Amino acid sequence: MEKIMIVEDDMKIADFLSSYIKKYGYEVTVAEDFERIMETFREVQPNLLLLDINLPRYDGYYWCRQIRKESICPVIFISARTGEMDQVMALENGGDDFITKPFHPDIVMAKIRSQMRRAYGEYANKHEERVLIQGELRFYPERLELRFKEEVAPLTKKETDIIETLLERYPRVAGRQDLLEKLWDDQAYVDENTLNVNITRVRNKFQALGIKDAVETVRGAGYRLHMTWKEEKS
Image (cartoon, rainbow, N blue to C red; front, side):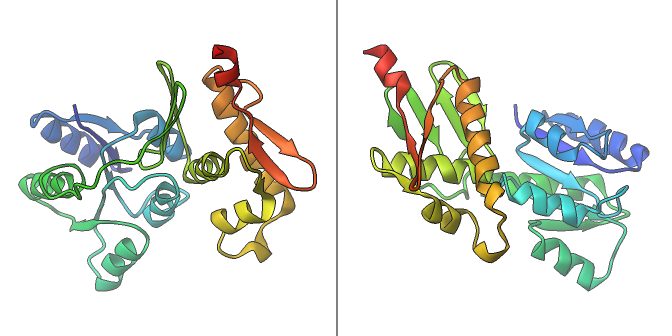
């Protein structure tokens, strides 16, 4: 069942949208904690997001930018703002469409169906999905997903980029500079610890799949995959 996530601080509107969309066979999650939007997004892994602009603390533009670091799922803004610049800002910050309030629910459903067709259906790009396989490990860069046997680990965009680089370079070392260039366009503003933190997160994702010591540090050079899962099998 395709999943829709709604981020709207007016609970009457959110509940109305949720009830209406569910009639068409979608699974719907309404965000309730506006401090944990990204955590909820990662838990739900929605196929499409309905996103208000005026939200507590951070606005919808901010959350759309954060989501775009991890996902390419369609984002439809729904807002009482009607200015042209607001719509431009929505698209510039990663949105796919814009609906103004008040809205007719049938318009919302038509927009949802349209975005779903473009992203996943008859109008979607039919290129063959890439998958990198090493033994029982399967890496899906376009899904932001790592699989080992029956276990699945969702990835952030940066974790995906690191794992892709390590797999492509194996058995060679992926240099720190190479990784920095792939992950950040402007390295001048990247703290030295930032790469270390992301490498630690990648190690934790392998660990969550039951794979220990997957990424080894090569002093003075960078990082290399240590394919312990293949050694254990043999």
